[in-house]
Amino acid sequence: MTSREYRMFLEDMLEASNKIERYLTGISYKNFLNNEMLIDVSMVK
Image (cartoon, rainbow, N blue to C red; front, side, top):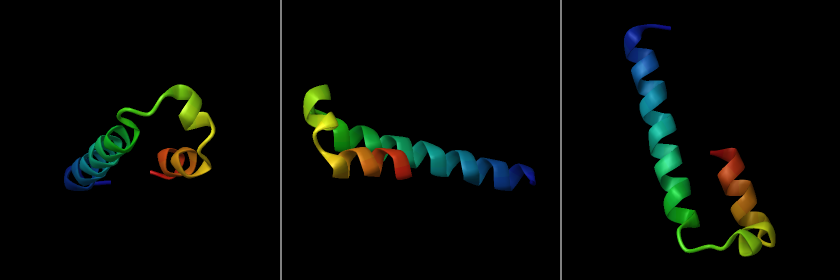
C-alpha cells in the first residue's frame, strides 16, 4: 500500500468512528444492547 492509500484508509477509519460516535451520543449502554440496529451499525463501520 502506498503512503496515499494508507492516508485514505486512515481518513476513512476516522470518518467512520466519528459517525459511530454521533449515532451513539446520548444512548445508554442498556438501550444500545437492546437496539440491534445500533449494534449492527457500530460493528459494520
